[in-house]
Amino acid sequence: MALEVVILAAGMGKRMHSVLPKVLHPVAGEPLLFHVIKTACALNAETVHVVTGHGGEMVQKRCQDLDPALYGKLSFHTQKEQLGTAHAVSCAMDGVKDGNTVLVLYGDTPLPDPALLEPLTHVPQEGMNLLTVKMRHPFGYGRIVRDAQGQVSHIVEEKDATESEKQISEVNSGILAASGATLKHYLPRIGNHNAQGEYYLTDLTGIMVADGRTVQTTVTEDEERLAGVNNKVQLADVERTCQKLRARKLMEEGVTLADPARIDIRGSVIHGKDCCIDINVILEGKVVLGDNVTIGAGCVIRNCEIGDNSVISPYTVMEDSVLKVHNTIGPFARLRPGNLLEDEVHVGNFVEVKKSHVGKGTKAGHLSYLGDSEIGKDVNIGAGTITCNYDGANKHRTVVGDDVFVGSDTQLVAPVTVEAGATIGAGTTVTRTVPAGSLVITRARPRIIENYARPVKAKKE
Ligand code: UD1
Ligand code: CA
Image (cartoon, rainbow, N blue to C red; front, top):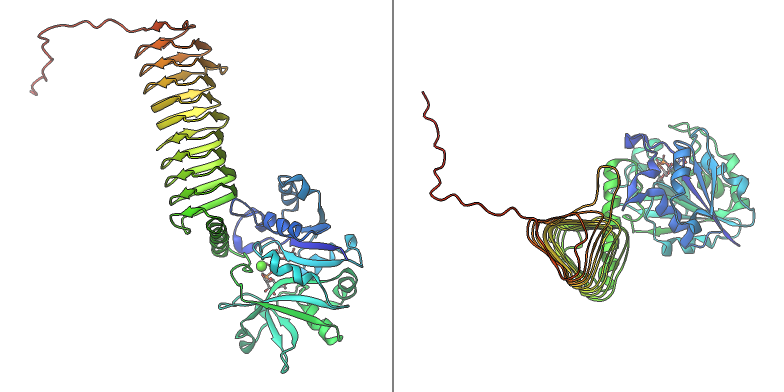
């Protein structure tokens, strides 16, 4: 039997108080829904049915940002009115094959462990599997009501529960699995006579039990991973859980974290051996670290590849850049998109680099802007060097050859070329090609006036 997954994502999320549909609120930098879709695909689902409604167009459009291999598995279904979770599942049933197993996941419950879900997909003959959770604070969840023999009898929602039912700590995760045929048979039998006037998917349990069908429960204590997001407090809780899991995974793989509670990973991290990450670092998008890479406190790194033995010092912000080995960057450096830094490059404090290719051993230690440039090997960029790459209308390139010495406070007015081995005196404005091996200097000669008398402050009347 092949697996099909139905993800409920049509709810408005009233308690979020937001114009953004609930399932698009981000956890670890991507929509709640994306986490669920990835889980569904990790379980090898043949088709992933996404039921959308509130903000449906926005949700469908956002899904186009997914990896094409995942997006290709999606099938969207519209639930015009949000009449409840059972109604939402029935909206997807047209696309479901009777003989397939259907796993229902919730778009607002992003962190279930695939290892916990896989066994659920082996459904008892004509029956159903239900995932339940023991929760210390069950408030808000549907409660699992069991008979004297401990067999599940039905589920009662918080709003419909009696005082004694509210004491039950075993709750409905919302996640269940049954065959397509079973769901198609029982969903139409669910009514909406309850406190919210909704068609509750949870009623499936009571109806199937009463009909003598097997409802098998799997109880887990992993309440953190099955927490749903209904408001911003729960969104923050789920974010913390997700970050804790990611930090733990990195440490298990050998990365040293100064404090696992103070790192945020909003994407994927690939790394070599002996990497160390200090506190308050944010890694976004696709980050690749070689061996022995050190990242200082407060760095924000997005879509970068950082080669072996590189040191990124505190408060560096970098994106879409490739750094080869033995680079030293920061503190307080800014790498904007499109850089390729060869081996042993040094980019120091308050240096901004953009769309530049910087050669091996080149150093820009302090207070500079290098944009749209091609800089050779072993170049010294003095403090305060600026590539004037923008003429107010277009961007132009600066080319600096190997072994050039750029004195402090130099302006390189692009397009311009400085050939290999040239020397630029401090304070120079370079506006045309500097030939190889030459010195260029545009500095007014100093005039000295001896015994100069400074103006004195006028006395107040
Ligand atoms: C639901 C369960 C509850 C369970 C909890 C777990 C029901 C009736 N209740 O409650 O037993 O403990 O989840 O988190 O199922 N949705 C639709 N269409 C609708 C209504 C909801 O697609 O008409 C979607 C929502 O977008 C959401 C999910 O279904 O992703 C759950 O809906 P929500 O309203 O959050 O249900 P809960 O009150 O949390
Ligand atoms: Ca919910």
